[in-house]
Amino acid sequence: MVRRLFISIAGIAVAASLAAPALAADYRLDLNHTQATFSVVHLGFSHVTGAIPVSGGTLTLGSGSIPSAVTATLNVAAIDSKSSDRDGELRGPGWFDVATYPTMTFASTKIEGTNPAAFSIVGNLTMHGVTKPVTLAASYTGKLVDGRGATHVAYSATTTIDRRDFGLNFGRTVPGGALIAGNDVTITLNVEAVAAPAP
Image (cartoon, rainbow, N blue to C red; front, side, top):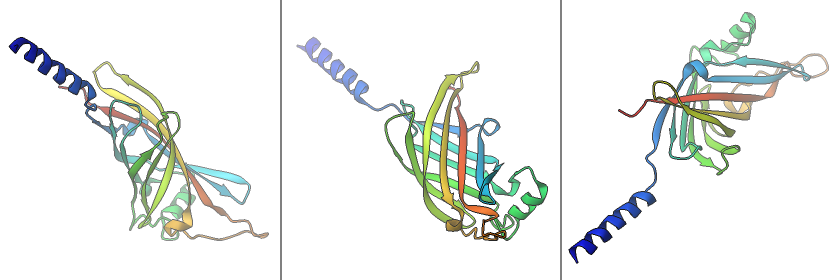
């Protein structure tokens, strides 16, 4: 009787452990292998692209490939569009005003979808002192354990925002009416995150 009771209890414990969700792991963004780029239409027909360095961020991941939470901080004061004159203007009060708002941040509020190849990250983007909800179209691109036992994961994500929603209202045009800089800005993130090996 005691033996049957012990076996029964052991069986319940095993079943419970199998049913329990995997513990979530916290990853930090690998800043040497994470990039944020932007693209905006110039003069109505060409594109200007640039980069904003990622200066920090985290990612929470369970047993699957889709994260449950994401944060990122971007260093707008170091924006790089491959033109020192343009970068100086972008950093100035007519655009990002980096003396007052040196960074932009993103913090997820929910993750939508179950397909690792195509899911959505919904969250709050804070830029130029304004916070607005945005949705990033995201995809999982891989996972491995390196030679030191650290686990790496990678994702790509993109969104398009209207810069005027964040108070970036530069509206100068050229003869004919085309905007020097378009209102829609596409932001693309290529993220690699790493978790330290278990002790």
